[in-house]
Amino acid sequence: MAETRVPSPARPAAAPPSFHLLAKPSGSTCNIDCAYCFFLSKEALYPDDRHRMSEATLETYIRQLLEAHRTPEVTVAWQGGEPTLMKLAFFEKAVALVETYRKPGQRIQQTFQTNGLLLDDAWCAFFKRRGFVVGLSVDGPQALHDAYRRDRRGQGTFDLVMRAQRLLAKHGVEFNILCTVNAANQTRGREVYRFFRDDLAAKWIQFIPIVERATAETLAIANQGWSDKGGGKRLLYTQTGDLVTDRSVGPEAYGRFLIDVFEEWVRRDVGKVFVQLFDVTLEAWFGRHLLCIHAPTCGLGPALEHNGDVYTCDHFVEPGQRLGNIADTPLAKLVASPQMRRFGDAKRDTLTSQCRSCAVRNLCNGGCPKDRFALSKDGEPGHNYLCPGLELFFTHTRTLMAVMGRLYQRGRPPADVMLWVANEDAKRDPRAPCPCGSGRAFEFCHGDKAKAAASA
Image (cartoon, rainbow, N blue to C red):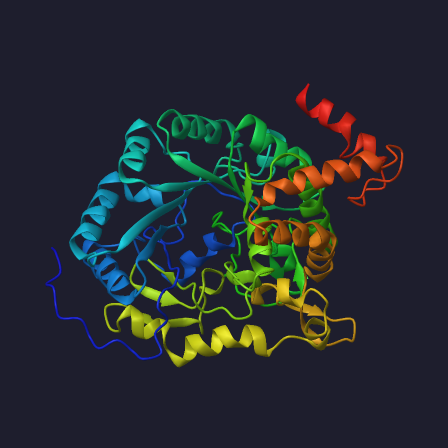
C-alpha cells in the first residue's frame, strides 16, 4: 500500500546540499558466494528477516532522497547484495516514484551495481529505456575472476558474467567495470586492464582493493569466507583487527598494480578509457576531491538497508554506526546528524603524523578510514594499511598528472600527454629498466614490443 504523502519537515541547517547514498533493497542477500564479500555476513544483523525492501520503505526513500537534495543532479544508486533479486517490477516502481517526487529541474541518474547473473533481455531493455548506468563486477580474465567469484556450488561465474556483458552491449546499455584487486590478480595489472579494454570494450573502470580485516582469534574463520555455509561458526564482519585474510591485496602490490595499469593507459588510452582513480587524482590537482576515499573528509556516502536503516557508510554497516531509520527520522536529518559529522571529520582529524607530513597528502588524504589499522613508521596506530602502495602510486604518477593539469589549463586536452610520453619514450634506451619499476627492460614491459604482443 502506498504511503500517504505528508508535508516535508524543516531542512536541517547543517544538511549537505548533496550526498551519494547506496541503497541495498535486498540487503546483503546475494545469489553467489564471493569468498571476499564481507557483506554476506551482514545477514546476521537482521536474523529471521526476508531482506526485501517494502513498497512503503521504497516510497519513503525516494521521496526523502529527492527532497534532501539542493543540487540539480541526484544519483539514485542501487547496490547489494544483489539488487536483481528484487525483480524488475520493483525497479519499474522505483522509476515511477522518481517521476512522482522529483522537483522541477532535478536531473536523475540511476545507477545499478550487479554481478550480472540474472540479467536478460528484459532487464537490459529496461536499463536502456530508463537511462541506467550499470556497474558489472568482473575481476579479470576467467582464471582470475573465478579465483574468488564463485557460486554457492563452488563453480566459477565467469561465463555467466560474460553473457551479461554481451547482453548489456547488445542493448546499448552504458556500463562500467568494477574490479577488485586481490591476492589472485594483484601482479597482473596490465593483463586485467587489457582484458577489459580489448575484450569487453570497457570505457569506464573502477579498481577496488580487497582488504579484509581480522584479529588473531578470527583470522582462521575469516579465511574461510563470509557466507553461511551451515553448521560452522560464522562471523559478523566489522572493521576491527590489524590482520588481513589471505585474499587481501598486499599494500605495495596494490600500488604496483595501479602503476602497471597507469603506464599502459597513459601511452594509449587517455581520453578513451576512464579509470576512476586516475580521473579523481587529476581532479585533486585542482583541489577538487570527487571520491570520498581520497577526500580530506567523508560522511557523504551513507548506506540504506532494506528496512530503512541508515548507516554512516557502506563499509561500516555494523553496530555503533547506525544513524537511524527513515521511517522515524528524515534522511536529510540523519545525514546532517552530529554522529555523521563526527564520522566524516574524523577522517581528517585522526591522520597520523606520517600522513600529515606526507608529500602526497593533498592527493591521498590518508585513504579510507576502514583501512587505517596499521602502524606508521613512527609506531603511531591508525595508519593506512595500503599506505606503501598509495604513496608509491601517487608519487609515481605525479609528474604526468602535472603535465595533464598544465595541458588542461592551457585549453588543450589532457590526452595530449600521450604525445609527451611518446617523445620521452623515443629518447629512452629500450633495454633500460622500465619506468614502471618492474625491473624488466622497457621494450618488453611497457615499450613497443609489449604493445605489439598485446595487439597480436
